[in-house]
Image (cartoon, rainbow, N blue to C red; front, side, top):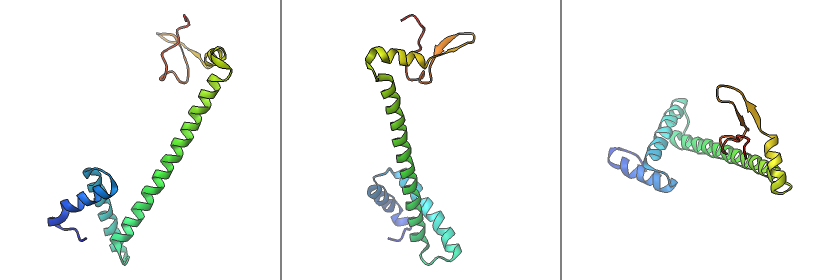
Length: 126
């Protein structure tokens, strides 16, 4: 399918449907392929648009794999911390959590932990 002014909207819609993405993402993808294709054309590649699309798809797949690996690693770390906190039942969990707390001096002194954004602050009264 050759892209020109008359079928630009249809091309964007086709890209969006095939990739299950929004129209803006489809436009961005088409522009990226077009720019990469121009670079390929200047370097003398036989089929510059197809080569550019292939390279872009490969790069996107590699980035997706990296994000997936990061997500799995982060999930493993979260699970390890949860296992540490809950090993030995609730009684032991309280002492384990308290062992991670530390004093934060300043105009509003408080006790905080590395996970403090996730839980309410510990004020020592409960």
